[in-house]
Amino acid sequence: MNSTDTAPANEDIDALREEIDFLDAELLRLVKRRVEISRTIGAARMAAGGTRIVHNREIDVLNRYKDLGPEGRDLAMILLKLGRGPLGR
Ligand SMILES: C=C(O[C@@H]1C=C(C(=O)O)C=C[C@H]1O)C(=O)O
Image 1 (cartoon, rainbow, N blue to C red):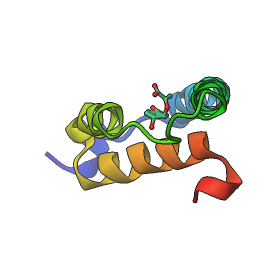
Image 2: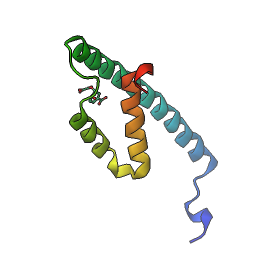
Image 3: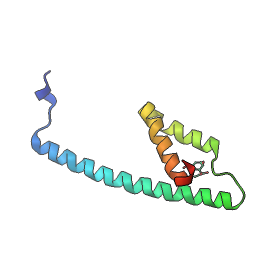
């Protein structure tokens, strides 16, 4: 098998890039919503005298992204940090 056996045609690359653009827009929308929810929960908990972080929940989140390997952990950490806001970094 050489690289031309699997290389997509130019028109396929255009379609695939459109899909990437769509997926990036969706991911951004979902991440923003996740940040909003995470900050809402954190603010409510702290207003009630609780902690900013709940470790066992965060471990569950980290485990969810294990499928992606070490980068999955990095991605999960970034999501958790975004949810903490600028002061939680
Ligand atoms: C959103 C929460 O608050 C924090 C944020 C979490 C998250 O972004 O997933 C998880 C645990 C907490 O540290 C929660 O307790 O569920």
